[in-house]
Image 1 (cartoon, protein in one colour):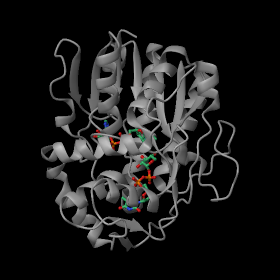
Image 2 (cartoon, protein in one colour; image 1 turned 135 degrees about the horizontal axis):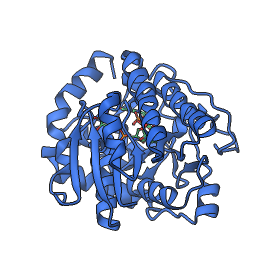
Image 3 (cartoon, protein in one colour; image 1 turned 90 degrees about the horizontal axis):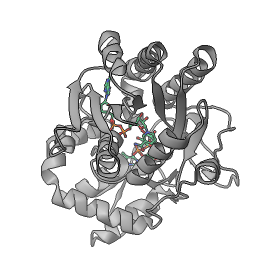
Image 4 (tube, helix red, strand yellow; image 1 turned 120 degrees about the vertical axis):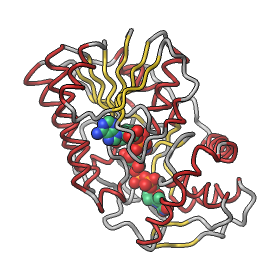
Length: 332
Ligand code: NAD
Ligand code: TDX
């Protein structure tokens, strides 16, 4: 890959991907990002000018997307509205960005015969019971629960149809919950860390028995690069690192690592339709493409993430007050 177009590259995973690519490969990177509330330009400061540029614009802008796709070797499509809670309040925005944005990109890569990797989520498969011995595989039936996951599922199906009907050169990955630096403070782990840093108590939705399958963002991104280089066109790869933990355990671990009593958190209103459990079986990615995660110790990765938020208050502070005001209005 000589020149990459990265949509949504000013967000959490995209900005870490851009840094990963610039550090680990010779590719140049253009980010296309609408710079919504979820973007943070500070995530992209200090990148080498000769190999990196930021274009402000929407993946729904067909002319802009066509022009950019024509000038790059491959596209990695991260851009999306990504927060489940927001999708319950403003579903239309999720339909537009996640579905129409992906359609717009597909039409451009189809026209220019450009390689596409589409980033998706394990949430397209719905949720599992706590005691279900099975995990999600590429064969699991789509069964999304929220407007967010339904819109991501729709986008995945468009990609599959464009591969089959028009010969688009695309791959798809569905990843589990990411953690690491530069994640917006609306999300679970950064919210709790920054609440504690601000002298307040973490907020657990409902019972807190819900299970998420955590993976470090750099492991997600090394997997994406592996698929870009060695993945088979038309295939779907599930990305996960065997990191299942319930939310209560994660909050208690954050409290312990930050030197607080492990019971000093509050139960707040649950998320309507809250998925119970996600779990990824990444055998295909590991065995067919030889990928392995590096961050196999969640406690260590979480401690480093806590340090990052402690040391980078100027990065998250501008978003914190408005985020908490919106949660407070919903009793969360
Ligand atoms: P994020 O919300 O942090 O970042 C999304 C980025 O997309 C932002 O920079 C935003 O400005 C940009 N964007 C939004 N609308 C746009 C538009 N119309 N045009 C161009 N850019 C636009 O999200 P994230 O957590 O980094 O997630 C990135 C991708 O990974 C998403 O597709 C998400 O579904 C997927 N994913 C996320 C996770 C996770 O745990 N966060 C797990 C699996 C998959
Ligand atoms: O304050 C909170 N308290 C709480 O208990 C918040 C913000 C969340 N939660 C719970 C809800 C979930 O069970 O923590 C869990 C994780 O919540 P989020 O960070 O909102 O993530 P989730 O809904 O699991 O979705 C994430 O992973 C899959 C990303 O936001 C998606 O973009 C990705 O597709």
